[in-house]
Image 1 (cartoon, one colour):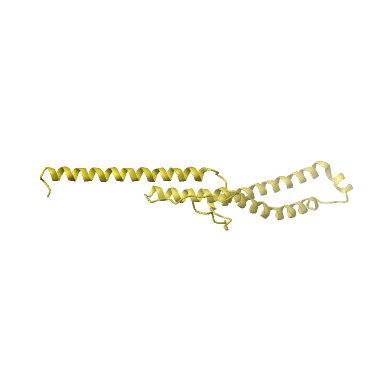
Image 2 (cartoon, rainbow, N blue to C red):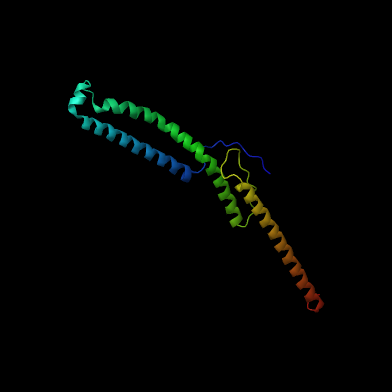
Length: 162
């Protein structure tokens, strides 16, 4: 069993993790739009008399601090998303690589997950399937060798081959 290596790359799979980050940015943008529309709607419903009574405060006085503070929050959310998705993107990448080796007829390396990775137990099942496949290939190769030796012996006994 190979010891696991510490993970250094945060972005293991752009297709999975990048799309997830883009979705979070989209949700953040929608949230900001809803926030602005809500405040503008609230100010429109309260009427100009209420706004004037509060000292003539305009809508951007309410909106800007919230937009600025949430803009500082977005990188933290994206970083947390990358850390979270890395725990299953990394194992999926290893599975994909080793399955490709198997599909090409090569021997797959043993997969060992790091502590904290998701897809718990799948590495052990994959390794068991690879071991079984290797065993079955050895049996099949042994059987083919025996059949080849047997057919050579039959040809020799028939006097066809010296």
